[in-house]
Length: 60
Image 1 (spheres, rainbow, N blue to C red):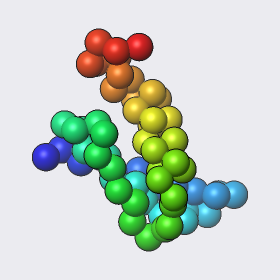
Image 2 (tube, rainbow, N blue to C red):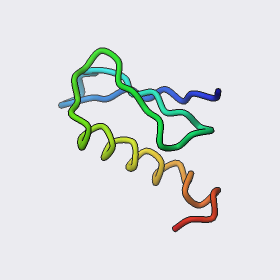
Image 3 (cartoon, rainbow, N blue to C red):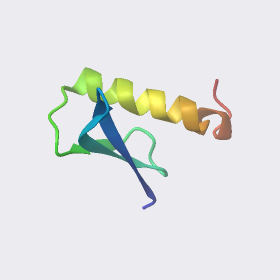
C-alpha cells in the first residue's frame, strides 16, 4: 500500500495530517485532527487534483 502523507495547516500552523492511499484513491484518513467526512473528502479531492492523480487514471 503506497501512502502519501500531507500536513493540514490553518493560518500557517499545522493542525494535523491526512494520509492518502495512492493505490485506492477512495481511501484516506486523518491523524491528529478531527475532520468530518465531507471536509476530509474535500481535502482528499483537492490533493488528488493538485497531484494529478485523476489524470493518471484517465479521469477528468
